[in-house]
Length: 185
Image 1 (cartoon, rainbow, N blue to C red):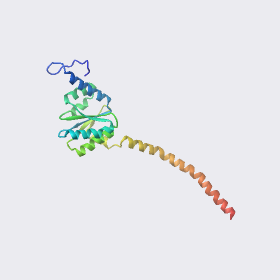
Image 2: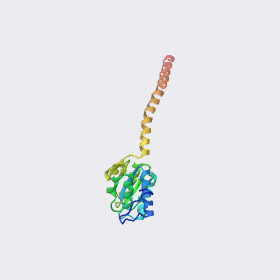
Image 3: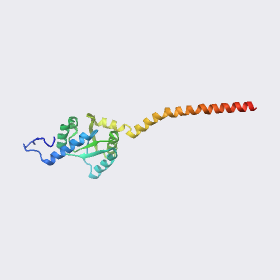
Image 4: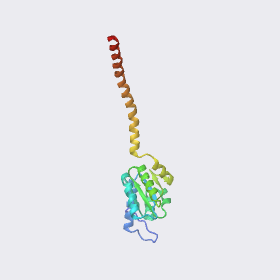
């Protein structure tokens, strides 16, 4: 639903400008995000929702509450119809621009401390994710951990080679020293 769209509401009237702006905002966030998670927040206080947002911030993710009808309009416009099934009841969308596994971890950890937070599912790169898929994603190592393991894997053969190259002159020196001592004796 773009600014130039002439979509009418169920009553036959054109949509209000503020609602069109919200739908356009959701569309922009969906287009910018690598992944989107849908969660139910029934029974959470404003302070608890703020805590979830704070936990997600380091992963470049935002946890936002929108009206389901406006979110459904936006996801249909973007072509993410597989999110439609999760938009029932009080739902929040988590838009992830950064570390997807880190954001899934932050949501999982928040859900452990706040049982009222229920992760329903989401979308990653256009592919639908169930709640179990999001949990599996949360179990993946973070980007930093994967990079550290990769660097370690690259470093191991180099360290071994350096050790072997050091051993050759060291062993030669020991052998030469033993030969000198043997001839001196």
